[in-house]
Image 1 (cartoon, rainbow, N blue to C red):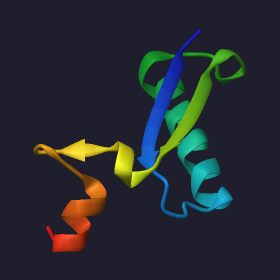
Image 2 (spheres, rainbow, N blue to C red):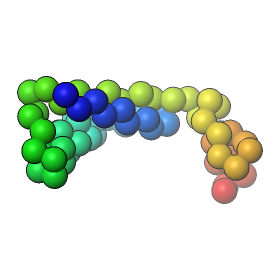
Image 3 (cartoon, rainbow, N blue to C red):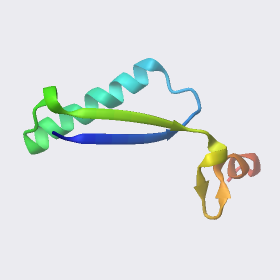
Image 4 (tube, rainbow, N blue to C red):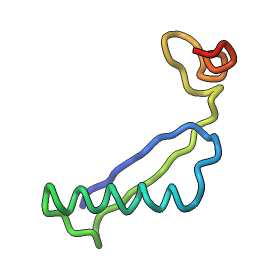
Length: 67
């Protein structure tokens, strides 16, 4: 029973894009590992950019600087 957790920044991913991520991850596990899609769970967590850090600073600040 695979469990896939996808974390993205909360910046307006559409319902269609999230559905494509879920379908794609499920298909990949089926194709590569032979996992049953009926028992494959995919969860998407959206994280505020203030709560996501890279290289010692928030994504919000990095984007503000254009990094």
